[in-house]
Image (tube, rainbow, N blue to C red; front, side, top):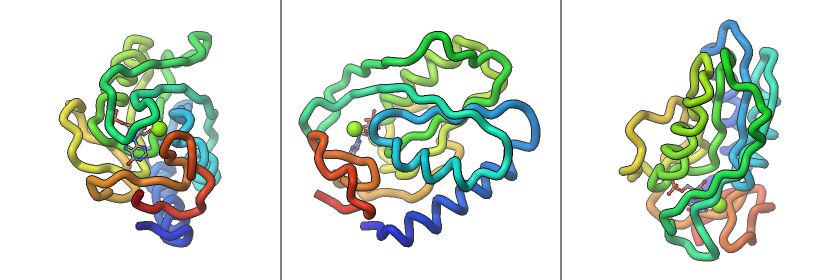
Length: 164
Ligand code: IMP
Ligand code: MG
């Protein structure tokens, strides 16, 4: 679906967009594990301003290819969000349920701003009220794997993105 070269090109553009958008203040990039792990590592190296990195684990899929509904969040409650610009890095937005829940939890901790950067967006999110600020690619309504995305924990290591 997307080659390693296409991904690298787009991630570098996203890095420039993000660099331009955040002119001042403290920026904390929060990667949603595990899907965004590879994306975050590439993305932060294309952002040319000071930033810090953190991770949150969220899961809404079991071993299947359809969203199960319940979103489980595992994060470090010690991380200070107050007064900082929070940029959530997500691998793919499907129903939008994971992000909606995450935004609700993080907002309650008074960040200066909160935005989402998703590598892929299926554009079928019904559970998400607000737009995703930075989007890498529009994705087809198919199940994708590679570049961090898994099917039952397999395929994350592929350097490209493929449809199952
Ligand atoms: P949502 O809560 O329905 O938006 O689901 C978002 C999460 O489900 C993503 O962070 C992924 O981990 C996973 N997911 C959704 N679609 C896909 C896909 O096509 N391939 C792999 N994982 C997916
Ligand atoms: Mg996943």
